Length: 406
Image (cartoon, rainbow, N blue to C red; front, top):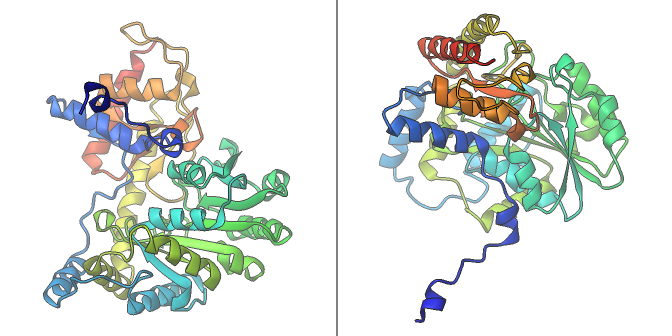
């Protein structure tokens, strides 16, 4: 082999070159690098519960291993798990589905990707309610669609209105993507708000809705509303959910979607060529989680509510943060433009939320994610899924670091 051949550069595909690295993962990586140098870093960058998976779910996984659940699984999931998901939709959301409408995947992220890749053609427009979870836009890119960011105002808790949606729809609009409760803002759409959005969708029969409900159980305002409850558009709604947030099962990698039979079959087909069926033991654990109800989730929610309230009190002492009150999930998402143009003690100018996030990491040793990754470049996302003492210490550090800016 010649030297020229051995040293030839790797030519990657256009699609991978166009794709951005997940900024939540990138910031967590920077935090780990500092920690490896002996720095005491408090990471508020990951959207991960700090609770252990409930014991009864762990026990079900152990039993599954002993019972011989070590073989390939059906691509859309075990039939009894799919039925349990149908029962969950009926119990929690008053939605009627059959197992043929359910596809179990390796995390809700895969469910979202399956739906996008099954529906979106090159050039199709996908309206993404912004701020949005970091992977939505990259999934649309992978499908060669065009993302149309529809930005909700801070004054409306970052929520897009039906009127704003109607003005954004064009003949090329194929899909709408949103989350409620929202990552990163914690906003929760009310029944009235979703009803108005459903009415707009009903007048545009070419448009589908991808509703990300992974934070359903982490809701501080009471009622969770699924847009699929509006019968006139139910067959055009794909509802995605999972176990990572409500059951503290992030590392188990199991999620699911519910959709019309045609869309569910398409997602199953997509999944069959990429990962096939989800891990057998994980599925048995997920079945146990659903059969165990939501009492463990409700206990965690009370802790998240207490932490949210504590953090909001701490943030009141930080001038320059404009912070709406989250109604769900476990984040705060302040507007930080009050610090743009300020100078650090070493002479660097803060020109963006990314600059500010890096400054807080390097000076205060607190990791957070800048809002540009979520379609909101004036904001920073802080996770409140951390122990009380860590949160207190983190925001004391943040306050002290920001006080150094001039």
